[in-house]
Length: 128
Image 1 (cartoon, rainbow, N blue to C red):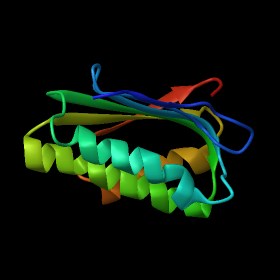
Image 2 (image 1 turned 45 degrees about the horizontal axis):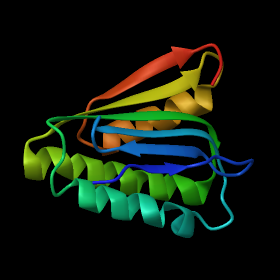
Image 3 (image 1 turned 90 degrees about the vertical axis):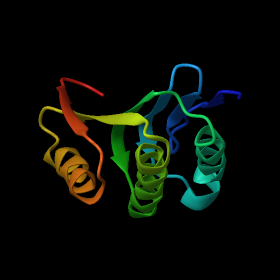
Image 4 (image 1 turned 120 degrees about the horizontal axis):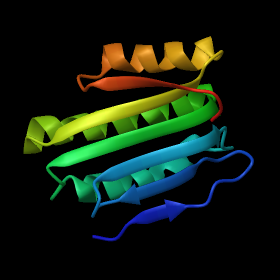
C-alpha cells in the first residue's frame, strides 16, 4: 500500500499517511474551501489501510486551527481509525497536540476523546 502525502498550504494542513509505519499525521491550519473534497483522499486511504493495518497505529494531530466543517471531517477520520481497533484488533492511540495557552484546541481534543473510544493523549507544546 502506498503512503499518502499532501503538502500543506495557507488553508490546508500537511497530511502524511504512512502504512508501513502505521502513522496518520495532520499538521497546520485546516480551513479548506471544501472540507469534504479535501478529506476524500484521506478517507479512501484509511479505507484501504483498514484492510491490512499495522498492529499499532498512531494518529498525530498538530493543528493550530480548524473550522466547523473540518471538525466534522476530523470526527469521520477518528471513526474510521476507531474501527481499526474494533474490526482488526489493532492498537490505536491519538496524540492531540495543543499550544500551552490554547484552551480551545485542548477542549476540542477533549471533546473528541469523549466521543471516540480510543486513547487520546493530550500533548502540551510551546508552539505548533
